[in-house]
Length: 483
Image (cartoon, rainbow, N blue to C red; front, side, top):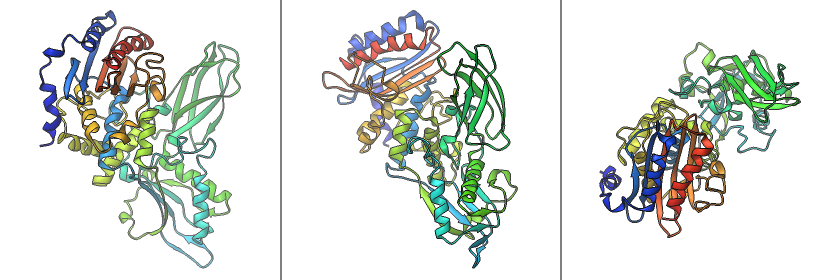
């Protein structure tokens, strides 16, 4: 069994390494007063010698925040392949008559593409330009009028909404946008505020894209702050939203990003708008499949295929997932696992596929995974789990593809400030994770002496600021860089 290839190193004797500089650094860190109430899980492993360098509570499963993205990205690269893409497909029912009229409906069948209209792959203000290309394709197919509706169908990924363990305070904000069968514009809406004097209520001047029937209750006040201190509350698919908090006073146009209530319907709505603007009249209103009481149309075998649009590759999406810690992309990659293997792209189905893949390669005992992004506080992953994954990927033919998705300490991505100007700068390639009272890192270290090291550290419920904690973690990471 392949699973025993990696597990054995966690049983190796540790005595010979108990007094080294890395072990001293993690022991000193753990004894700091900031960890009086905390849970810490740590391990460092020499990838060439195949031996543990240092460890502390390495089997303790804790919340690891966005470091959990290492599971969704590595599994997608391994199981689907770096060049894998999915398709958004356009069909019609009915028939096209001699007058170029579609007597029927136009269907958008989603394949879970999270890159559709994404800011990460399109210049600003061009994210929705693909709809014009779709409109041109319809004209080229001889359609100048639609006597039905534009229907968007993302049903193959289910409508469960946010994964288990996502906070009510997260899901209305941009980073809490959940992935589905249809995703567009990063599943975000942009709210623009005009701010007056401190203490006065703000004014929402614009929302893009426009969401029909959206009710946005505004409790955002101007204040003597320098950044966004506002939060948006609202459940998936709900058109009732509450935004509250504080924004900088005397600001004419301050943008706040929220999650899109219903991307499936929104895509049908946006495409209908573009079609009409481009001279293709659509008689009936746009529809999201979730909102109509009909059965799935017989796997589309009775429909006529028009064209499709491929997503960006797994490699491209995995890069942004880890480099900028994009939650939507992580969930989308996870969902592709279930969709590609079982035709069911739900979170539950996809986690099952992920766990079945890794169960034959590493020891998953004690690991709990509820999402692909790490936003769930129901996740529980130990340093050992991450180190086993990193060791497996180090030996994989896909190692370079995987490693290139990781930010570099002191230089790029989410760890551009980590170990800046210190020994770890440029030597640590890692995913970071941060949510309230949780900070974690996991990845690779190329040390000064030429050693290649896999490491993972997660801290829960620490007694200091996030900045102070990072400063203390840097001492441990620098010890790895100089080991």
